[in-house]
Image (cartoon, rainbow, N blue to C red):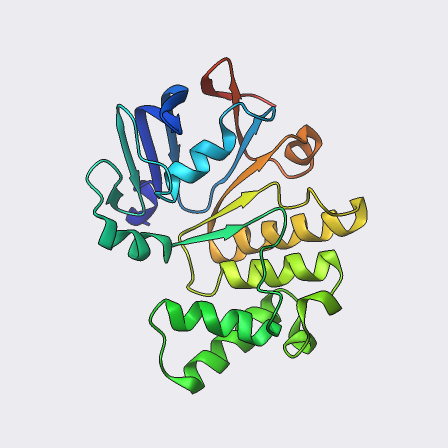
Length: 228
């Protein structure tokens, strides 16, 4: 399809900032629909700063950057929520709201992104919980769930608005090996069946070998594509 020739994320000669300092110079990165892209690197090498630039939490330095059709260099503050609705984010530490049920966690996101119809909200919550194998957990509190179950709910939250790209920041970092494998398989399934691009930050090279994708590595203040 023609739309697949348009990247969902595109950086050209971009300087990535961490605070006021450049942490990655001259980033050239294009992510197309349906691709699985890894960003490898040590702690402090700029991986998270790239993520924060994609979501417009960090301002762009020199160069150009576009995400889901938005120009990061000229993005207005009032348009940032619109951009973020087109991105799903999965964190290492889940970041669920601990004082409300799974259903209310998901409803909160939908209502805050413009959904108003109760029936439509309930239907969408049912759909995403089914997609991650958590249909029976809607009325559970997060503390009643295992780490793997919490991460599945976090993935359900990330796909609520059918994002063009999912950003996964060390999504298996707090999980045991078996549970982590289930999460990776789920993300791959979403990537394959929905055509959702996935950009995953990880320090674990074995993941890249088991679930092949494009690999970029941050080191020495740069981020370059490498072969596995």
